Length: 465
Image (cartoon, rainbow, N blue to C red; front, side, top):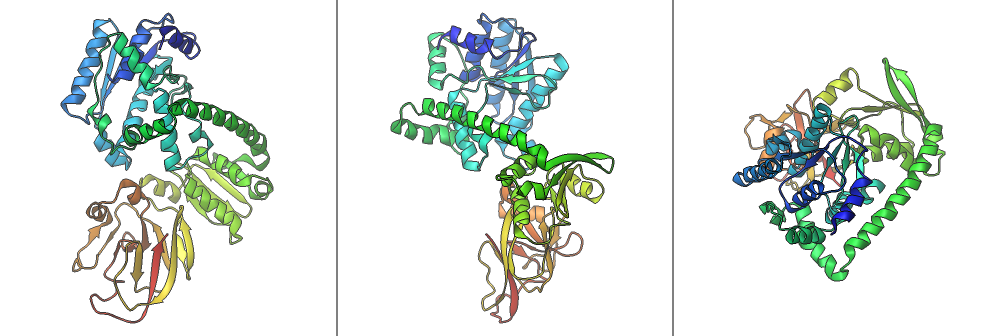
């Protein structure tokens, strides 16, 4: 790894002027990046920024002290932020890794706006890029997710600052070689060896196997991602040329709204992908967009359906889908945060249903054994009834609690549900916050079948699929 190669990368990434904020954790990648910046022929005013996520006790504090001492000994300005990452992750129902990412980039954006930095440099390398590709593929992704990280991208939350990744062309092996040959010091993050984190599992256990199959697999993946990026550009051009023919803007409740003409949309040869690209910028996930697609394909009543993302509402009327900021009751539902009701479904008969991408089958059965397999709910209930997403404040009187109320939020803790499973929880609604069942898990005593006696009689079974 030669410094002049780094300089060529840097020269094509940085804005013509303006200071640079270097995101430095103290690990080998970021310390090599800091050293390369310090000795680069491409001179820019720079400041080191360090995030202490307080996930590793004294080790985290020692990392911060190490980076601060490195910066001060070289006369480089230093900024530090301390975060309660675990609390943030719990409050927002997200993983620790995602919480750290959101906290980090929000702080970077605030610093850039306040202190005028033109760019934030992060030390992502070729290995990181390949790991991200695999993570995207495993969780499900669109075209953009298989293109890999970009060496240059906008900084979310900042008006003009950008993110630059000058090490993206370098492998972790090249970075380590540079550090050792230059006698650089760095901090080892003990959590990197913990393969309970998905990224570490890929790094520590999957990649060594791939290297045995193809020693140059990182180069192969990098070339693939470049080709995917080219294809993505072609698709973007096609989408850009067709969107204006199927959608436009209009006014509603004094606010601008997107209006999609469904008749024109379905006349397009790739209309399902166009719908995805129309809805994705408004935060609708793949499951919600899948429900919209199913509604269009289903031939059933189209008007009157409502779909909610975190910040927007999409509603159907005749041959149109209208997307905009929520008002009135819709705004209240969004303000409830995680677990808000999203498009309740009235179940009037047996059949297969889908709510925000969560599918379930309803049928009427003759019960001979009241025991309920995992993922199945059997209740002494008749049609019609309403299924919705759980909401904060929901409660029931679970069987065996002798009439005592229990909040669903407490039941989630007892059941040890992950934030992802909690977010997808469905309930059978009753009046107000009282629910008759937490589908797949618990039923309210008012609709429970007698236990332990064996009974015969009609009941409704709901199976999550």
